[in-house]
Amino acid sequence: AAARRSILLAACILFFSLGLLDSSLVLKDSLLPKGALNLVAHHKLGFIRLRGGSSHEAHEQGAGESYEEEEEEEESNDVPEDAPEGCPGTTSEMAGKSSTCVGCPNQAACASGQSSAPDPAIEEIKARMSLVKHKILVLSGKGGVGKSTVASQVAMALSGGGNVTGLLDIDVCGPSAPRMLGVEDMDVHQSGSGWQPVWVDENLCVMSIGFMLPSRDDAVVWRGVRKIGLIKQFLKDVNWEKLDYLVIDAPPGTSDEHITIAQCLNQTSNVGAVIVTTPQEVALLDVRKEINFCRKAGVKILGVIENMAGFVCPHCGNSSEIFVPSEADSVQGPSAVLRGAEAMAKKHGIPFLGRIPLDPKLGIASERGEALKNSLALQSLQSAVQNLRINCKGNT
Image (cartoon, rainbow, N blue to C red; front, side, top):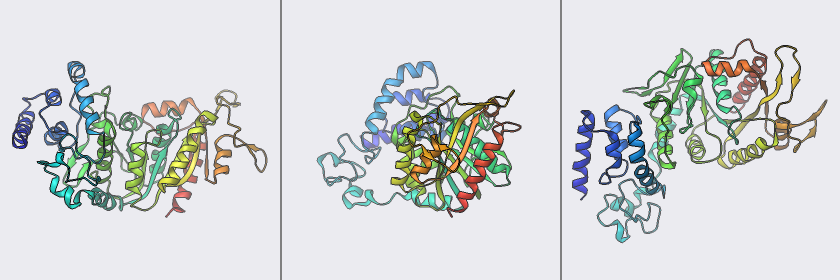
């Protein structure tokens, strides 16, 4: 059976390479080993390009099977892709010894304990990341607080100061970095030194799964294992070269992506996190969870940025509070009562980088993929970035 499946996979790769086989058919073929579609796509394009299910017909006919197949694949993170049904997992005491292990190509490795050896990708990540001076995770407990806007503007501001900067978008299901840096129509290419990031200018480059989608409207319907694999590839296989800063835009929350990036980068040096929030308590509730996550994961918090902190009228200059700052952590400051994110940061003993007000020009700049200029929010952004630079130097 194993030989028959290997022959079938080889035939699929050949036909796919010649353009004779549609990837949606591969997706629906239950005879293929798990992960076959990724293998075929990798052989075809030199990197993971998401071709499966690009047509409406493929979505309608294959979505059920692909989702089911992926659910089976990810029931346990320690089950190899080519393992038989009922695999106890590589970390189980029965690994390589169970009756279901008979005939499995991994049986000898599992029985000997080789399968529980350290992940070889970590060493590759350490080597690649050794060329990056500062790694900055941009996190948010709550979605919709402007994290990706802040991440992209911070990356542009850092590069504008003459520092070579990279922006890595690990929000696999909602990639926005290509749009926010104005390079949506660019492609990722592969060379002998790895995947080449897209260069926005001589000091700024970006990598995102958004460059790999056949259409900007295509959904990435992945769960944990595949996201984890892609994030590791972004860290070890992208030719980042020598960077002063690598800004990493993560999705909201504290899930697979965050655990993976923290575990991978904790093996390197000069890693820190910036947490983005809005002033109100409903956002700060989740920010406190993010702070707790960073402490458990061993990631130093470089500071908190309070985004959408008031609206400054471009006509009269008066400021209005659109989101009322939380008073849950209110504390008396030198001249006034501190509220919102600043009060929370003080209570938890972490740096407060600054506030960025709501400004229509900031939204327009992000939509156009441009750095913020001539705006009421510009001074606030520059101040927050300067504080971030100082904290990064203190994290070396």
